[in-house]
Amino acid sequence: MARKSRSSVTSPGGLSANVIITIAIVVVAAVVIGGVLLFNRSEDDSSGDGGGGDGPVPTELRVHGDSNLLAEAEGADEGKVTIVEFLDYQCPACAAYYANVTKQLEADYGGRITFVTRNFPLDSHPLAQQAARAAEAAALQGKYREMYHQLYDNYEQWAVNGQQVSDDAARATTLFEGYATAIGLDLAEYKAALTDPSVQERIDADAAAGRKVGVDSTPTFFVNGEKFVPEGDKFSDVADQMREQIDTALGS
Image 1 (tube, rainbow, N blue to C red):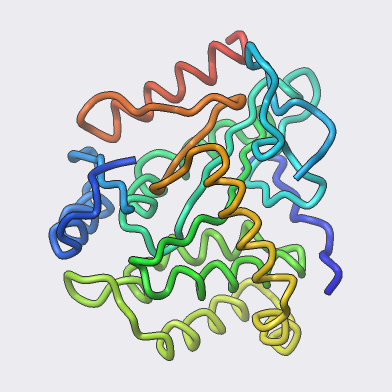
Image 2: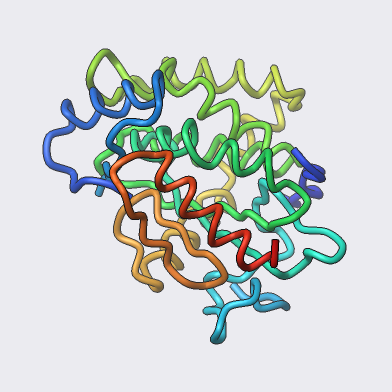
């Protein structure tokens, strides 16, 4: 199935997987109030070097012509900063990072940085693959960014059930179709794409690329080809750390 042009984006990890109930409690609280302890880790080829790193950027971390972008640098800032995030849509830590770090970065640096997302669904999250397929199906209609936001803005609707991650695939299917309709997708085309082999191949290729560069948990970020290692105990600390790294690369 042919992939349509990506949406315009001119502007707009954590603890080991020990006890999933504890993870869910910590992260749901983080999403609601922010600024709490954050580390909750759950378990291609193109032109350009992905930004101004000191060494060559691995092929797996470069921007592809059909990369899923949340932001794209323009003008004088083009090529200065490329962030690649390997994510799992059902990962509580990913949802918490979205709510407390990356959503605001996307808004504040849109047009100045290139922000790429790659799929890395974890086996410990029953609906992660389903959500990834929904996002990639939307991307085929040029609406990746919109579905990405639907999935994370509505995380508690589909991804969790009380204090545990949900395994209710039927509920997720219904909700995802609602999100698809809300962002203006052709629903028949969206449903067909969910079972298109190319969609699963893309997800698998992203995950394989992640493993090749050492990803084993989510979220994992790379800034200009170098792994971002969060420091501090609060999301605000990590956001400041990432902003400082971005600002330095931008020369601002």
